[in-house]
Length: 438
Ligand SMILES: Cc1cc2nc3c(=O)[nH]c(=O)nc-3n(C[C@H](O)[C@H](O)[C@H](O)COP(=O)(O)OP(=O)(O)OC[C@H]3O[C@@H](n4cnc5c(N)ncnc54)[C@H](O)[C@@H]3O)c2cc1C
Image 1 (cartoon, helix red, strand yellow):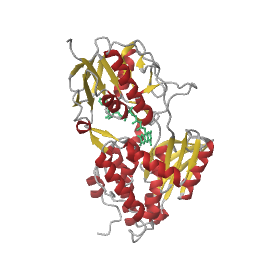
Image 2 (cartoon, protein in one colour):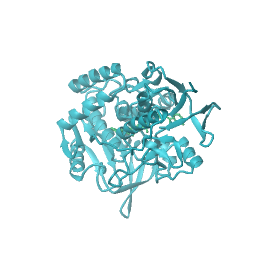
Image 3 (tube, helix red, strand yellow):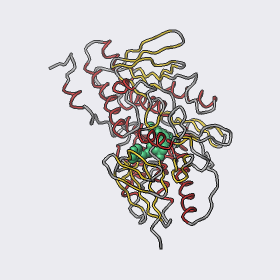
């Protein structure tokens, strides 16, 4: 028997994890490398950011998820470079890994459209750290408003701007409105949390542009009913610690707000850029690698790319969306292709994305869904959303915990994880508000 076929998978997100799991019975040595030791369920990150769930409930250690898969080892490390001709990947710490087949599933990162200086004042939602930073920022704003002496100061702390009305922006806006109107209703003495202004800014002419127009109108109605102000056709031109300046047509306007959250688009991360450079692969505007219908890098049939890092057009010529289902189906597809190769079979099938439906949640009992062309909104869409998100949470234990949390929160309007912790908390607490009572 010759040496074992080596499959190297970079990234244990939706795409990489599925690829590893689908290679379970393959006669191959599978190595999965991720720079984090956990798989993160990003679709529920906004619930961590808004105090409904704790990080541990939406993250699962990769080592334990794959502990029963004997042909797979999980290693912690960050892919930094690749030599595609020598079939070798180098990690940031110098580790070197050779492969027969490589699956790159390193995902994406938030794009500030070239304005990275906005990042410190407008955190985005992509990692656990960012989610807890947002939670910190939101809750802290109410605390500071309570201690403000002047009306205008309190107003600034109670003004929240969310830039980008895609699914993440809508989720954040809806949840924040519920925090202000329900969760914190009885918790303060000086301020009335429901006086908070929540503004959702969108560059395009409508919210949730990826959805059919009728559903996007419904979603706008639902979020407006919660008290969110939607501003369309506006472009942020600068963000600082006191608010946002934006353009609406030819006029420039300013919103004073102590909390600005960024829910814009995504772009390729560092390793994705390196891979494109080393393989001279073509990329799209967001830096995603244009893969072949077999999900390989052109001229490098041993390098597969799945998920957010890849771009491929569907049968109608439209690029596949950067969603979990595309990544998961991509992972499954490349596992099949790799198995066929190991068995010496030809595998010329093209990747076909089967869209099981698109959904966005707006708030309690409010969501929209487009399932096989059937448009649903309101309670039914929300129940479908709950069910689907629950079944896709990786670990059974987390699934149960999340289910119980949601049930409890639904009945009591509470949010159990309303803790101000993490990033610069000491800093922000020790910097006393100028009007402290002591
Ligand atoms: C806030 C938010 C909400 C979302 N909501 C939804 C939703 O409701 N429905 C939906 O379908 N999609 C949603 N998405 C999109 C979805 O999460 C992504 O499309 C999906 O995660 C892409 O999968 P992936 O495997 O390509 O990347 P990811 O799941 O992002 O995984 C990438 C993995 O690679 C690792 N990694 C990165 N760089 C390196 C490196 N150099 N070396 C080693 N490891 C590395 C990361 O640690 C990570 O584990 C949401 C995304 C966000 C941010």
